[in-house]
Image (cartoon, rainbow, N blue to C red):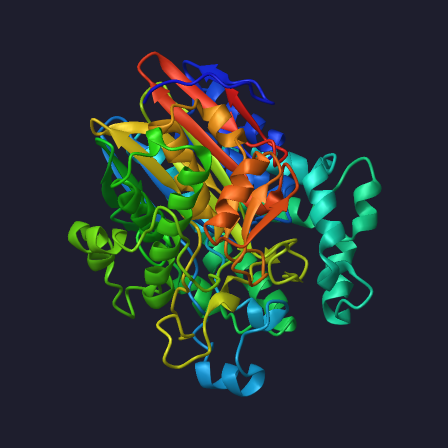
Length: 541
């Protein structure tokens, strides 16, 4: 990794003992506070994840899912945790097709058809930290900040105000009355004008979680209230669905890249897509290219990787996913030949979207975490589960109602997921710990981060801040457009247009490009970058 000095909007953050980055400064502060109390990177990530579920409710929450990559610095091992929920046992394909036709609605109880996995992820990560890493931080301490923020309130972030105001299907005049009644009571845009945004019912739920752990959420009194609230909104979730839920430790995927190894999660996440992009790019000298050539090659590699994802990605426990074939070096070498240096290949818009948060953390003991947490769309299904304060995700709306599609709806099945925490290892240890939100943009932004740092020599903060692009569809909008942030030089847009890309220049700092965070692990400390497109911070100890 050569070094290129670039001025940044936010200062570079360096630390020796620990570092954490998230899209909300209060969540980063919660993680840093745990580091200062003697916690490790896993503890810090859990605390930050619990707090961001409170202070960034439009992007994630207790009623969503999360996925993790965790490097155990003691044993030198990488673990992947899939804490995504399965469909309800009563979620029947034929019944949904008869009721809704071609697609599951994105809002309302029928969309809230998968078990929330977030709490199971926090709990499994805590047990790893306690039992394998020897952490002295008790479970309840990890939720203290989140409980206080929910109960005492906090100033709403600009991002929350902006997204809430823009979510017309939930907060506009035509929003369904059955969603308005509960949702507006807590999240109405008018409440954001107040100095402090309070979620008292969520505070009570988090306090109950602190006392009873994951057991109460999936099999206890809290589970009963969650299911009753979900059922009242038309969700098929039942007590048996929550009781049967487990977060699963799975084997991470790996591909070689520039003398190191890029890693991510296996299906049902699109980790294989992010890794395939890098594997395809390995065949090009990216360091020698100008900006237009570099963006063009990454976009073309993205198109090829997305083809495989759209064809096969689903729950591999129920439908075989040919991951080995998708990442086979010989096959990728053949597919790489389809990439022209001078012309864009035709490709249809990709079908994924979503609102998400990313958290990264690392410490001086060598532990590291990349974590993604999500409700899928902004405010998920729009369903508040009774008086729990838990906003239920709509990740189940990503299931297909086509009986021939590999990602077709089925009982107790996990849907395909956009969530992809990632790391880049050198000499068998983490060198880069990174992640981003942004649905379709996640593998593209990850490719931008890795190639900017590894191939083009940028530091983490500069790599995060550099202008980005998005090809295809995200946040519910179908498109074959290549969107470029307005900070790209006009000559770059012109050169990409000349290659056949349908170029559209958007604002200088666009939410469409996701909110990325990255930590570089150096021999003498930790260097972090956090995204000015969000409301976050990278904080060190």
